[in-house]
Image (cartoon, rainbow, N blue to C red; front, top):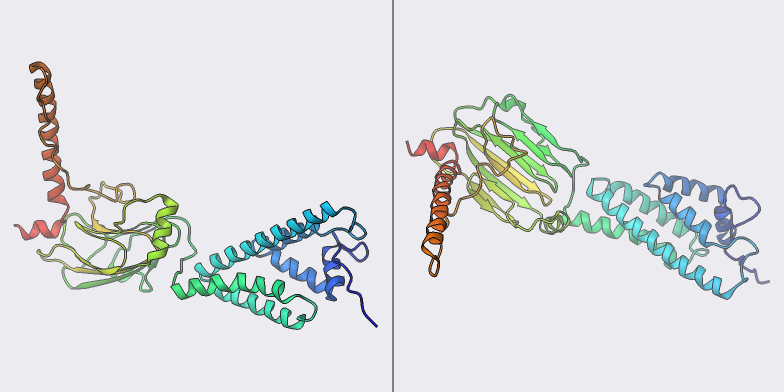
Length: 353
């Protein structure tokens, strides 16, 4: 005797809302109660369960409505395909975001549950449709975990001002989607020796502000993830490649070490910096300067404007143009000398005394 598989329809009897769960249970010979619990659990994960249920309510025909129109059937098929694509994309985005923020274990647990359900209902659920959600969850999680990308689940700005070296966070400082400022201008630093600091940064800027009136040597080892850094550039529209700024020393993406100017007596700050695309600034800042507002203080090296061409101009016009140029040049020379003197920091100034 051949058993006829019932069509996929929203049930009229035994339904609690739209009949989606009751219809799925009748079609695949599953428990409607367990399906409802699964939708409730999925609703707690970013509202996915609500979206999927609403899509099923709109797409799956009600009991007795099938076959009214072949055109309507084609629309239903297209809607089903679109809903499946949106659902898989949503699962992929949720899995990737959860893994980035350190909740990959939850994605693995959900994947294990899906695998158990698939194996238990293998004869009643098509293998392709059953395994697609599992792949959408696990593939991005495995790829991100293999790439070592992880962000601290923090979005706002963080500011730390430890009063002493003993108050440094021994576990290291972390940031996620927000900027990080470690202000050491008022910290009681030793007269010599080595101070260690570890920073695990996210995709925004990190600033280590040093005192402006004393020498602090800096040795910064850095490791910047390449792919996340490029994605960050695209998202925030950053065109420059320079990410590391230690006094007047600069570096691009990658792995390496930057050392500040030697000379002068003072402690050495050794920074171990890892970043998922954010930049690092380590230098001295006067107390009147807010590093978060002016991270590039004292500015970039100034280029003096060359003498403009005046051939073909009248005597009066040539005189006015040269007078304006001399005024600009004098200001540029003053700025150049000031910035050039301040860029290397207090240690270079102490070395020239």
